[in-house]
Length: 61
Image 1 (tube, rainbow, N blue to C red):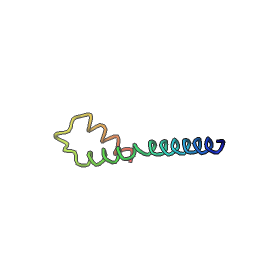
Image 2 (image 1 turned 90 degrees about the vertical axis):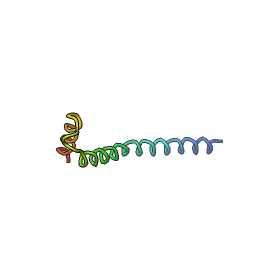
Image 3 (image 1 turned 60 degrees about the vertical axis):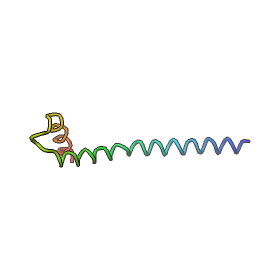
Image 4 (image 1 turned 90 degrees about the horizontal axis):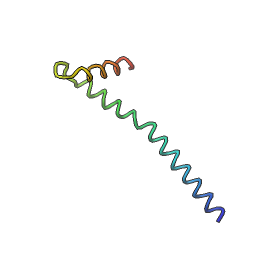
């Protein structure tokens, strides 16, 4: 019974750490997608908010 609880606790910690790792790396894909949208953006049709976000992203990189 003691081994069973050890296995349950170890698997819970492994799952939690994997979830945290996945969550911390999930934001990078959104930035890449947004960067692609900025490159395709038509300056004459884009609103001011989109232009400012794209400008900030370009300055970061």
